[in-house]
Length: 142
Image (tube, rainbow, N blue to C red; front, side, top):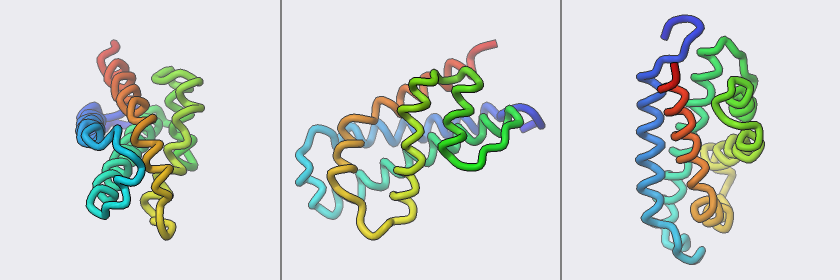
């Protein structure tokens, strides 16, 4: 990465990892919340969502750094994507909660609420693919 620019290879690696994690998680959607009572199912979903969140935030922080923007936290990195015109303000305000969700998953605050995992799994995966599509479009733009 040269100063003042993001490295497209790094971004594409994160985009691919994010897309793969979402594709894997889609196999687990549509099940009742009680499916997460199964330890193996719970760990697959929890880890998959952690990978989605971390890759999305790594993409955001890389793009922010490439634009010379200092971000004090992950949520601010999402806001910078809107400042740069990569995502809309509406998407930014909706998606920035992924930062707090990531912290809960990574730091393992005792036990993650299964209903929250179930809700994110079944209602918010499309936000990750939307981010992938928007960042890919940004990379393809002149």
